[in-house]
Length: 220
Image (tube, rainbow, N blue to C red; front, side, top):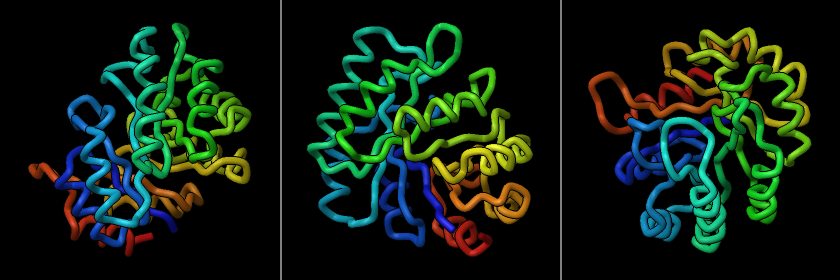
């Protein structure tokens, strides 16, 4: 069973990199749902830790449509973070119909030059997550971070089960959206999932909690 911790600051990143987590997703600004982090902070983390770090490529929060200048920035960021030894990338671009923007995503996957790409929860905004998942397989994404098209993984657990049954052999389904140590066991049992994603930030706390990470891992 695989556990990724989403981290939105350098403190949480170090807590997670020192924990039993298998990988971290590194981004900034938890309030916007995550945006591209600081390049120098990634360089620091890669010098100090060997655990894999996937970097969020998202110039602004909010939706998942980007202006021409923002899309150019995403291309530059993939190139620069690749040089800084990012282990993979997390991004997702939708078009004006809230569907997968095939060409723009394809260009970013190509720019990653073989480094694994994860399509993030933008998929949950699309009309049909099952059809969207098939497109992402075609595009060469290695993983999909999703809550099954609902606000949380618990709400979307039946859809997640179906998604894993339909395309789990072709692409990893990374279950995220309110995943905590008190529900991860149920999510695993219902969905048959093997890959989980959590911020491990407890209520009224600001940073990833080391004990919560340990409990997340032990409950799967």
